[in-house]
Amino acid sequence: MLRLYNTASREKEEFSPLELGRVRIYSCGPTVHDYAHIGNFRAFLLADLIKRYLRFSGFEVVHVMNITDIDDKILRRIGAGGKSLGEFTEHYSQIFFQDLHLLNILPADVYPRATAHIPEMVALIGRLLEQGLAYQREGSVYYSISRFPAYGRFARLDPSGMKEGISVDRDEYGKDDVRDFALWKAWVESDGEVGWAAPFGKGRPGWHLECSCMSMKYLGESFDIHTGGVDLIFPHHQNEIAQSEGATGKPFVRYWVHNEFVNINAEKMSKSQGNFYRLKDIGKTAEDIRAYRYLVVTSHHRTVLNFTLEALESSKAALRRLTQLRQRLQQAHGEGEAGLWKALAAAALAEFCAHMDDDLNTPRAIAAVFGLVNQTERALNQGHLGREGAGAVLECLERVDQVLGIFYEVVEEVARPAELPPELALLLRQRQEARQARDWKRSDELRDQLAGAGVVVKDTKEGYEWSWA
Ligand code: AMP
Ligand code: ZN
Image 1 (cartoon, rainbow, N blue to C red):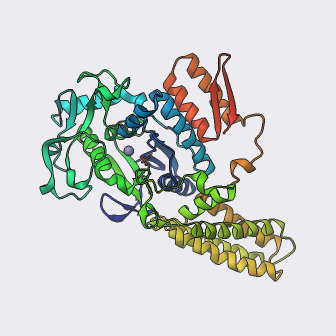
Image 2 (cartoon, rainbow, N blue to C red):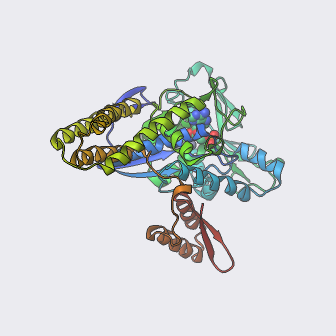
Image 3 (spheres, protein in one colour):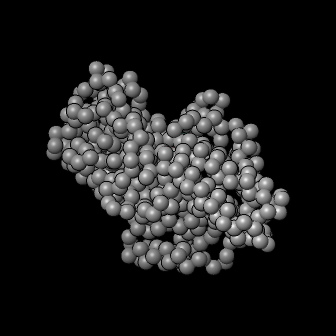
């Protein structure tokens, strides 16, 4: 039985989904104002690990990850560059999808974009206004935190520090600045061409609103798991709870799972500090990228990961050892003590699962695998392992890989077929149909799904062209 540390209770809790056998997960996705850095991918790798482990454990999983394609930072950046909002965010979105693919992160079922959900966000603000949880001021709308008694409980805020009735316009702010936050921001001159008509006046949505709105649209008003980095606990997730539970009166999320930071020289890796690596900075070869995945998924998500090139090298060495063992096992032949090896492999897998069940304790889980690896290498060196025994160990490694996703081949190494595999060709056809029906939202969703699988689609006068990313 899986137990997960839930930020809401600050305790490990037994996991059971709202619907029998089916888990609904929402992850805060990237803000596409720049390239994502390797720290960001820790958040997406955590969501991937949860999803893989739940599927491995027999659950069906529905996963939604938003793309923040409008916020303060994006507006500041396009102000400087002269590109349209769409052109600017599309560029970074496509690179983001390619990076997901390089890291073997399974694509989400939906990647909703904020700008494609303005009517839904306006409707949610309408609900909050009707219930007296929000107020209008000079064309903007703010959430009235004093009207939601539980405000601050999730983020463990000190209520005496809350400044009610005083509003903050910025999307990001600290714990010493707890105020009424913006749901809708009135258009200002510097927004240029960006702005949408709404009953409260032309403007744009606040960042916190999109996640409440799009998670509930695709997953229902109450769902199972919400993921993100620890920096999102306040204000972002606290505000999501206030918005969603304020509007529906129902519990919003059952389990909040947060990842700790990736640090570099003991400081949080962040775009604003300028101390970040992109995937391509550390990934000169496919093996480096796979090693980064290995490093992250075998570190516990609730401990800070101090990134160093030495740590990446040790991950590479561990992966090489596993890969070599796999090759030797595939070639193993002859007779051996098959029963013994079946039992050893089953015990290692059971131990792996027991550690995964304990709040996804991957460092211990991989140590259990290495216990088996040591024994197997010894037996192979001594010629004691027959074909059947090798098969049992190999199967254990394949099962482990369903969860950790470490034995994949990165794009450059993959023979890319000239013909698309049938499931991707189907998505491409569905996207053409959506375009013919002028259903742009659906067609964008399908393009993102294809991008998640490494396929880039370009629309042309004659129709479309596709290529591998
Ligand atoms: P952003 O694109 O800035 O909205 O961030 C996307 C995700 O990355 C969020 O879940 C953040 O919490 C997470 N994140 C940002 N910086 C780091 C870091 N240094 N280490 C781990 N996760 C991070
Ligand atoms: Zn979010």
